[in-house]
Image (cartoon, rainbow, N blue to C red):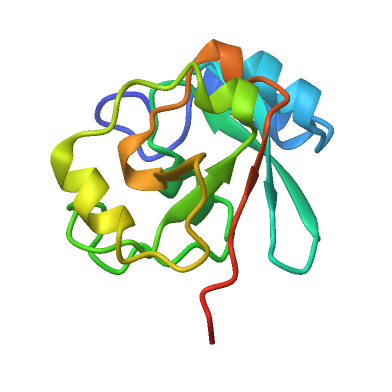
Length: 141
């Protein structure tokens, strides 16, 4: 808006009109985003797959919550529970940073613990994750 007026400027109106007419598809939205993303697929315990756009640098727990994926994260990512437990494919798991002692302790409490289990609150999205699948284990309930 122009200072001292209540009417939007013509540039503002033109931009607003343009943004409202962008087709609603991921490739177009990604092209206009200033944040770099990769596609990650979350797999529910029943096998349902949920491909999502994940912003590089975000924790996998936050990406799940941003996309309405059912991954609890009861402690809010404070490394005080194991409810954001994820299972990785072995080739992806081998590229992850080492687990801290605290994460190891929390994983000991997780259901369906595997050799490739990690907590989603401890893993940040990197470019190399493009196309990966992560499995959400059954929580036992």
